[in-house]
Length: 186
Image 1 (tube, rainbow, N blue to C red):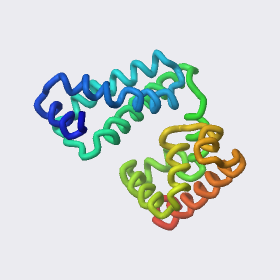
Image 2 (cartoon, rainbow, N blue to C red):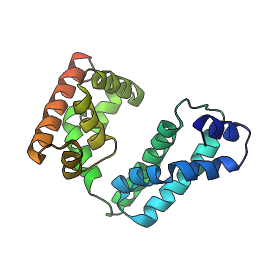
Image 3 (cartoon, rainbow, N blue to C red):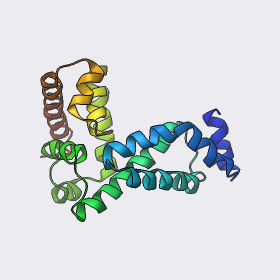
Image 4 (cartoon, rainbow, N blue to C red):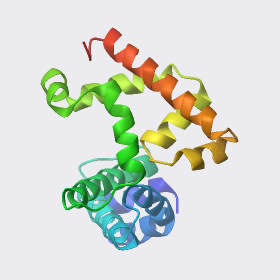
């Protein structure tokens, strides 16, 4: 079913919207959640919560790109679940590595939250990403949005692991310079 029709079902409060969303986006949501949680039961819970959150979000929201809208919800819920599990000394994997890598660009939570709202940072990072070459942007998004492993990214783009790591490091360095230039970091 077309995304516009699925969104219309949500707007009409027709429960068929959830079924259609599950049919079309289940694999997509599981791939996002699996990269973060790495546990089938936790993924099932996060994906199920994604459909409920989507139901609650439409309306009032009227997403133009349903896949992005659902992916963002699934990622947020999966990260929240991961944080909860990490607090209980579970979890780990690529999420921890990816977030640790970005910490050098963005800074610690305390100084960052005092200097800039999360939304402003996201907008600045979006602006930065638009300056990158297509493959650099795709590699960066695979690593820091989808939390793909270095090995998986290297295979997908037919790069060596060394080239992938170096590309990510250079991109993080440029991101840090960009954030400083934009006044986000000092």
